[in-house]
Length: 240
Image (cartoon, rainbow, N blue to C red; front, side):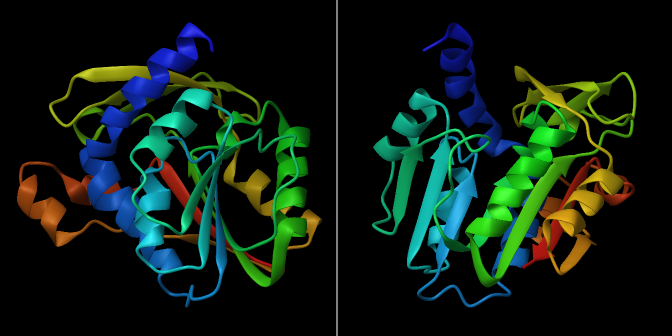
C-alpha cells in the first residue's frame, strides 16, 4: 500500500460531511436511482471507496449492491463499518477488470480517472456489456468552470478544457479546512455523450442537480442558487 493510498483513504472519509456532498450530490444521485424499482436487482458502485453511496443505495432495498474499488485500504474501511447484508465490497480495477452483471451501474467521481479517451471508452464498453437489457448507467463527473466552491467543499484547477487535461481537485471539510487534493483528468461533456452513443447506449441525458431543503436550512448563508448555476459537476443517465 502506498503512502498516498493510505493518506487519501483515511482523509477522503472526511469529505462525506461536505455540505454539497450531503445535501446536493447524494440527493441528486438517489433521485436518479429511486425512480427505479430496485427490488431483486443488482447495483454496481464503481470506485466505491469507503462505501458512501453503497450504504445509501442499500436502503433502497436492491437484491445486492456490489462496491468495487482498487484501494485495499478503502475496501477494508468500507467492510469494517458495513451494516447492510445486501452490500458486498470487493477489490478490483474497474478500468481493466471484468465487471459482474448488473441492472444499474453508478460511477461517481471515478470516470475522470481514466488516463485518456481510449481507456474511458473501454470502460463505457464494459459497463454497457455488463448491464442487463434495459439497464441504466449513472455517472457523476467533474466539469470545472473556474468557480471557488471552497465553502461547499471543493475547489478545482484546470489548465485547459481539452480532453486529457490534468485536473486538481482540492477537497474541504464542513468547516472549510482542506482535507486532501486529488489528481484527475478532464473530459468534455460532448466526449461522454459521443462515447455513450458509440458503445451502444440507446439514450443519454444530462440531469440537473438538486439541493435539499435541509441543506438550505443548515447552511442559510451559502449561495445555493449560485452553486446550481453552471454546476461544476455533471450528472448523466444512460440507458441500454
